[in-house]
Image (cartoon, rainbow over all chains, first blue to last red; front, side, top):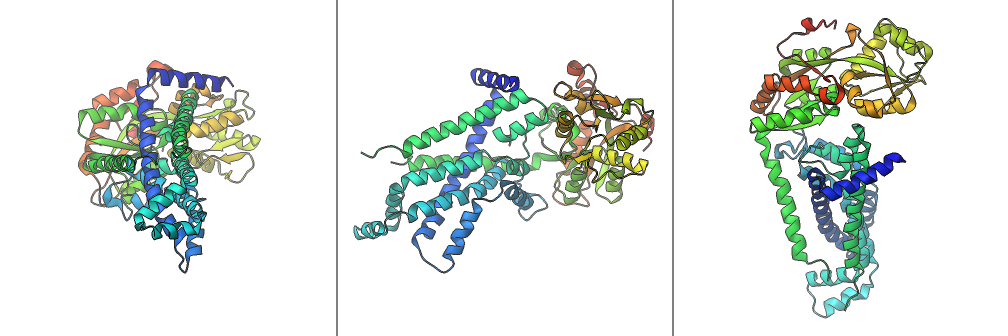
Length: 231
Length: 284
């Protein structure tokens, strides 16, 4: 129990001092997972809208694949992405291994099925006449998509929060493709693993708390936008 | 109104560009695949910035254990390897994958375990006898099990005894680095083979004593090697050569010799550049 209290005290000390390393790691976590979530959102909405609104042979299989993707073990994603990005791999010449970009790629693969799956469900729950009415009012395809997304705002924001949560809490894949390099690819989760391996449990708990606070704050912002009453 | 789409787009583009920008620094990057012990002790955290300050190069330190490090070298996924199993290293060089192999530093392996020492390891006169005591008393033992230098030495000790503990109930395989394996042993009150450096570095959080030390077969030497650019493609050989030269340079060796003294009262590794293994009394 002492260990946990020490860790909490250490966390406040870090946040109060503004320990530069911890801030740097926190901002990097936010940028990397934020980018991954944003890209996953673009993919998710695009693919999700097609799957929700169109009917074509094989659609059900695709939706099943997306739903299966939600349960993809992140460490498996990490292994596959690492193999692809290694110098000895097919995409080695892009020199992406052990860079933040590699982590963004891995986290996007992890978050995208989540966002897509939620989007398919969210858009599929909308009344079918809505789209017909919007087209009838002269909406273009893009306008229709934008308005429909607004209608499905509640579950859509849930999708974003789920995607971000999966990305920012990911550790195995991030270490494999990122290498946990100080000043470059170390994020909050991978830093916690390192501190535990080095027996620095205070620091590990402190970083865990910072991570939890970060996730809470991000969700606070997203939730308040999600729940905002329209005028 | 959803978060302004343009703001989101701007952030997205910026983040992607920033990520890709760092990826383009690759000509100046050395990938160092290393055993976990120089990494877990924090030694490389001190050495690498010194090198990066003196040169234009950046080093990416990937701690994976000796076996995996050599594998990465064979695939060309690493430019330099820092390992501590002379047999595998000599094979690596003989197969044409390693060049410029230099002795870097050494410490020793020790057998650690619970203070009450149920197997009587303290009474042993040599390492093999100590391991025999563990085997015969069926005392809990945690193995690295990760093809690391430490793991290979542990397996060679069992082999010298003529036994194979795999599958026995008292023999557990952690499959992790030295720090993690020691923590498992500490929590379980079990025996383990460890390098002295990591043990010292983690002394404050471990409930383990050094129960056997000093046998020449427990000498633990670290060598650094460049991956051979004539055998493998895609390497940054200039950067790699520079890094190897740096590690055996006076500055680096001085840092190695003083690392840990302030905190633990003794250096975690003893610098050896320019000497040969024979001078260290290696029996391997």
